[in-house]
Length: 115
Length: 110
Image (cartoon, rainbow over all chains, first blue to last red; front, side, top):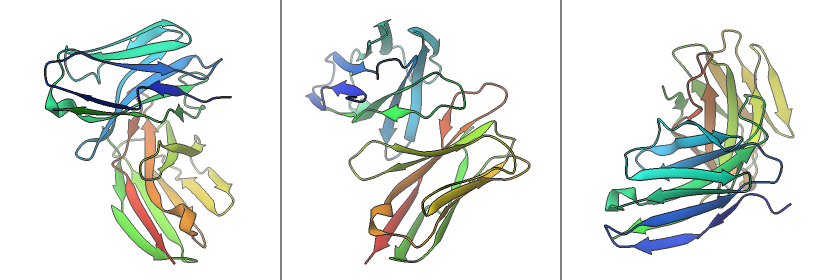
């Protein structure tokens, strides 16, 4: 199994530009999570999906952030417009479902730098 | 409500033991433990669900106290490969989203 796949691995963009991060979860997993990691704020859950449906997006920082999961094998996290404070590592993780019993498998992350 | 982890950082020599604590002001539904090496993604270690539960994986084990407000991760006879940041992740019975603690940075020296 290839594990969780994220692209791109690195993204450098200028303030105001649109950024799209992509994630392919492990086949058969029904839950998908987007996290942001910074030195100041640690690992923050942004949003998670169950069976392609967004369950809770209360962690999404602002309306500039949006996430979609059009099918079971693909999700995107979009930032429009991007700002320097959005610079972080963004992880996608998947699990069999969102219950407390299941471990989350993390992708390698996308390191985003907004200049 | 983010759980509290202690210590924030610890430095060990190979072969020494360490304990990392994760605590909450209210009862937890579950505690997950993950390890993240520098520049890599977090990797799952174990989940504890029941008060009083203890689990082990080789020389790394964990406990979840009876009141379900604290979990401890025990690293025995540490190896160089144990270096990294250890995170506890918690869930609450009221359905609050999964929340990671701030992490404990562990450095094992030769």
